[in-house]
Amino acid sequence: MPKAVTCHSLQDVRDNIDRLDEIIVDLLAERIGYVLQAAQFKETRGDVRIPSRIEYIVERVRHFAEENAMDPDMAESIYRHIMEESIAREEIRWDKINQS
Image: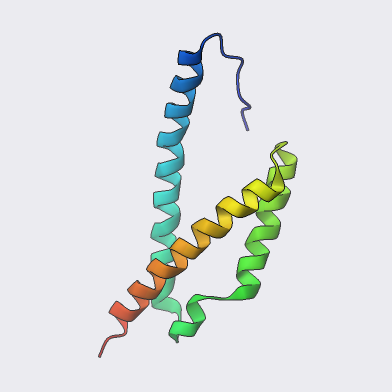
């Protein structure tokens, strides 16, 4: 995976951050698309939040962060927030699918 290149101005830094933000949001949108699809495969609303799955993801993300010289605590914090937001939206989707 590419690492940050050396920038020669503040504008270079900002341009690269802007470029990455577009990629990150695109990937987050794809991720939430899969999260929302998961709702259709879960039998109960309680199946949306699986603590063991959350911890599995956290451990993987911490490992990926370490491999990329990123603070694993920061990566964990970001991902815990992403997962909480994802769970909230998946619960809404589950409710919609299962309303009767």
